[in-house]
Image 1: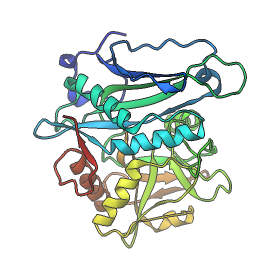
Image 2: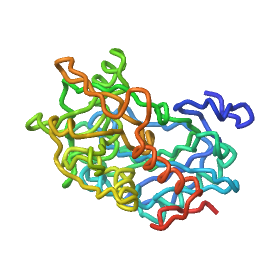
Image 3: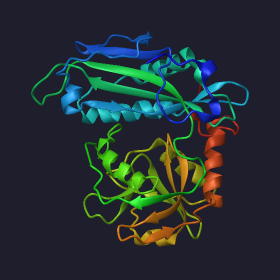
Image 4: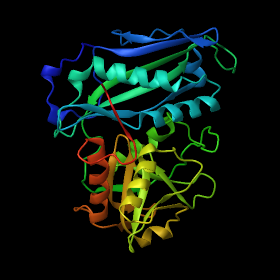
Length: 342
């Protein structure tokens, strides 16, 4: 794959895909410690055919973004939370922690080295960052690796979904696999079980599938790549409380934003019947930010329309603007979420 050139990119039509940028960060874990890491121009990794990650999936990853402000500066949003979540996932998969200060160093170094690829303010684009860790030791038996690679790559992206455009969703007929997690059954970076239901949903004309809890098939969990939220008819922000969904940083941020806006936010179990009390609904995550849910079709073909199938609800708009304004530097960061890339 040829290296990307910033001068050849249309910042307003980036899409959400991979581009081979000049630099990424790599560090190796050998003999019980990290070697220190640094930038590399090589976008390829060489793995033994018996590498643990290829057969037993000892791997975790994160996703975060770098934003260009109106003044041309670049900033990150809550990167320490990504570092903590990566290490929480690593605990469950018997992987070493990557030190939080090294995580921040790596992310900043990758952004600085590829700064020309941070999209201009106002284009809707961002620089997406993917930190990940994989077990590289050649193994045949089911046993944890002792050697690992930590990497961070970056790619400029546009909107993952069509911004504030209401989209149709469908209830999934599949269970969302509930892999490992300590208190959180879903670790960061386990989406393969979502591929089949997501693709079937898209082929049928829907944006994504919404999963119910894997135990009772009674409570709302999340979408394939984003958490679910709703706004009740009396104006309360609600989002599912579940041990089988990704502990989303965007969700935590929006719970705080909703509190700031006086929406009395709450995490609780939501049944399908509870959806009838929602005036608005949406998907939320790092990639999606906020995507309004215009409608949800159940397995019997019954369609539930929320605020509108064509217009965005007023509360969803307020939430989106409040969060994006902080991420883009257009509003005061009163919670200490923004980290400048110096």
